[in-house]
Image (cartoon, rainbow, N blue to C red; front, side):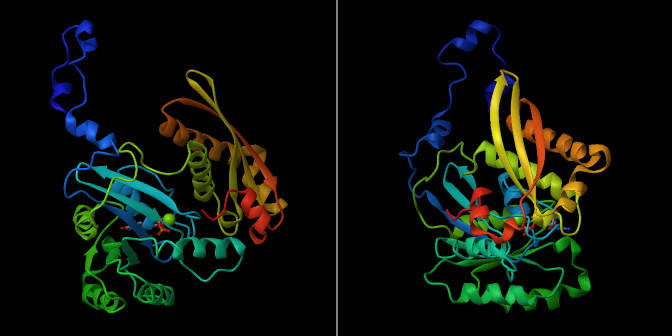
Length: 335
Ligand SMILES: Nc1nc2c(ncn2[C@@H]2O[C@H](COP(=O)(O)OP(=O)(O)O)[C@@H](O)[C@H]2O)c(=O)[nH]1
Ligand SMILES: [Mg+2]
């Protein structure tokens, strides 16, 4: 915080004086796309890796807020999500991506395509792996994709989940990952606690080219409030359901509007592929849906800073993950 907050103005009148509470030069400059200090660095950082290694957690930790939802289930992230970090002398634009894997349906294909096409757009590639286990064939596949990339974007290797790596395996595992792909630098991190994440950020900024500020300083993501709300609902569905249900779920926010000054009305459909999944989601006497609804509402209230009325409906769309047209309706379109 600034010093101003330590010395509250003595009267209400003072607060309205133009000299009080005015942003400093440096603060103003953050929001001014045309003002770029000499040596300003910026660029797009593709966060790639196989499912569940901690890509979204890492981005959220760096940004200091939840921009992408996270869950212990693989394939949580479905779209490319921007996370923007603006500081006086740099702007890092993270592109969080779905995990690269061997797709089994149209949704999977869409996800892998979304992830791989960030590679040529990137100024820096963050290749995130789970260092607590040895490289898998998916890691190898991603390493090949990176090696074959066109252009010069440097690769930073992130050995995440260091907290789960037993000391006796440190050498063997790190060597295996170092050998996987040519990289400019590497860092061992624990994304959940933030261990070494600041050092990784230094490496990222170091690797960025000089460039303009692409987004205003107060913009943290490219998702709309509606899209984030839909994701927060899906996050709770992932949290409370098991087995095949999580992957069969899509959430679409149909309405998002301020009913009163202090109340936002949100209506959303949760789509599943089968009647049996719908029954699971609703639960005995509607208990499951209430649980999901309450938790999601609290998350949306945190996001908006307002009270929220959440109206949730569960609907069946047979095999939506396999149909192009249905994917588009659920909001999964290449952008
Ligand atoms: N122990 C541990 N768990 C982590 C770490 N980073 C992420 N996770 C967990 O791994 C799971 C997958 O994380 P997520 O960010 O969704 O992975 P993504 O699929 O690569 O985006 C979640 O349960 C996270 O809490 C870490 O450094 N250590
Ligand atoms: Mg993710």
